[in-house]
Image (cartoon, rainbow, N blue to C red):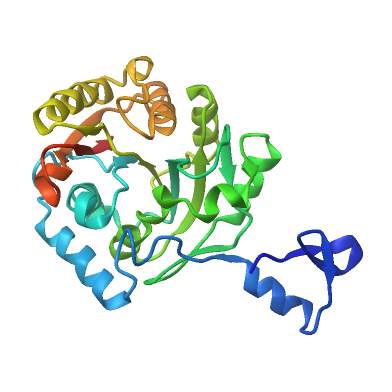
Length: 295
C-alpha cells in the first residue's frame, strides 16, 4: 500500500491526491511502517518452515573452526545472491557469530543498490523489515541520528525492491536471539562518507556491522577464481583504493568498511571463497562469493 500521512493536513495522499480516512489514523500508520519482503519466493523460500530449514542446514554444514579467530568479529562481509547459490558461503560467516550471539543487540547492514539510481547512504522510514521468519525491528533512533547529522537520508524507494539487504535477514534471525537493524543502501560516494556513518553507529560489542557484496560476475570458473583471489588479497590488506566495480558489486560499502577498518586497526580474515560454480550453478559463467570477518 503506497499511502503517505500528511501531518499538517491530518489527511493521507496517494499520488498527490487526497483520500478519505475510513479507519482511525493509527491503523494506517500500522499498515505502512513495515517493509514487506520483496524477494521471498525468488531469492529464498517464502514458506517459513522451508526457509528456516534451509538456513539452519547451511549453518550446520559451515565449519566454524576453519579460519576462526580468538577475538569476536566487529564486522563481516557476506554475499547476497539467491540462497541456493550464495547461502553456503554466507553461512560460513554467520556460523561464526554463534559464540557472540547473545551480546549482539544491533546490526548495521549495508548493501549496494541494484534497482534505484542513487548516491550516498539511503535509510528507510519504516519501523521494521518483515521476512517469512518474522519482523526485524529497525533502530529508528540510530537512523534518525544518522539523518539528522547529514550522514544518511531517507529514501524508501531505494529499499522497496532491494535484495542486497533482505537476503541477509533470515541468517541474522537464525543466529541472533534478538537485534535491531540499521539498514543502509549505499550508492556511489567516497569511502570516507560510509566510514563516517559507520563511526556514528560503531558502538561496542553490542553492535555488529554487516556489508553485503558478491564478488566477480559472469566470468569462466577458473578466471573468476583468479579475480576473486586478487579481490580477497585486497580485502585482507584493507587496500580500499584498489577495489572497484569489477571486483565486487558492493564495492562502495566494502570500500567504506575497509576504510573504517584501517582507521580502527581491524584485521580481515577470509573464512570462505567460492562461486556459483561450486554451489548450484554451471561453470561457464559464475558469480564469486566471499565471506570475511573483521576483528
